[in-house]
Image (cartoon, rainbow, N blue to C red; front, side):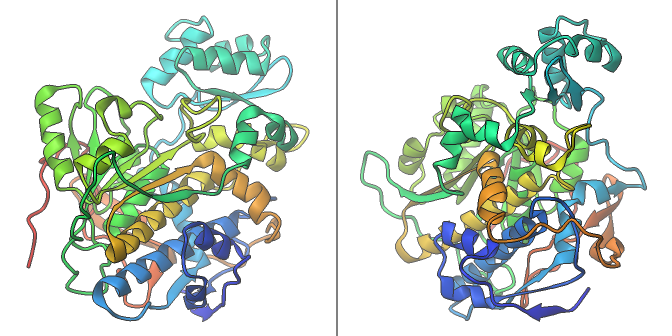
Length: 478
């Protein structure tokens, strides 16, 4: 890989802003070094700064936790722009026996409306069915038919009608329109993320941390992570925790369809289990897993898992010392707090698509940077929570939202880092790719960008079939 040179991060840099939001010691920022090819992920907004900053603080949090658990020094962090840019496009670089995955379905796209543009998301069959039903179309309707109907309707009307039907559609807004929107104002009034200590209504005794790792190379060794997330930020975070040594169990409901292609990208280092929390036997199994978990990461629509008693207050009592990390599209506040959302839709609502487009059509970021960036921030927050627990125990609650990351990109980062819209230097992505055999076939994939002196270079195992593993934690090793 490209040599990495020493760089001292300033507190007002992107990494400095993110590290401050995580409550990190600013003195540790001088442990961060950077390098690699320039001009990657070109855009009008500072996308590359977001990417390298989120990876930098994730690596720094990993190095800090390793030092905390082993009593050593915090190792230097290496941020190679080539590795970062490749990882932020990991789903595009993935190949299974030479086959590229399908990322967007035909009805997941921009559409002209009578007064502007709307973007829909219909990758999952149930979202596609709800979209077509909301538009009054037959279940087998194609893109041409949908385009004709949408061209006669107002964008906001489509947004409200589709969401009311349980589908996903967002009207294109400019940055100014989003700032004036009630949800946009609610997001702007909040920090990039929140990381708080939580206690239940009854006194709780801090739980002992997991056994010390046998090597500083795996700062999360011995830790158990329940992964209740779906595309894409949550799985990126838990993929990173698995890289760092955590035992990650991804849990999916058997009645909800999920993409094996998406899991092929984000399932590295994990095991995958199928459990229905509405089934008594499966719920009992989940409760047993939760009783031994150190971290619970959730990425479902706010309110959907709380119905099963998975609130921060109840969990602080049921599982003292648990780190609960929650990621959502729009945050847990404002009129859109219970809405589903994806990176592409958040870009459209928050003015990013308008800023990256032109008079002819909306644009998009060069990567699903809100998802990937939020994922690395989520992993960093979990690692920082574990470091805090090492000192004073207690439960922790971490919350992030794609909308908050979008606000940071458009306002916080844009004030500090110029966008890089120029041509990139010569860059060979193959340098940052690897291949391995798996039960799925021959995988080509992006190597992890999170790196620090002596840290792991790759995951311990490739992804497997969704739901194919036993709902059990790995046996503890001496």
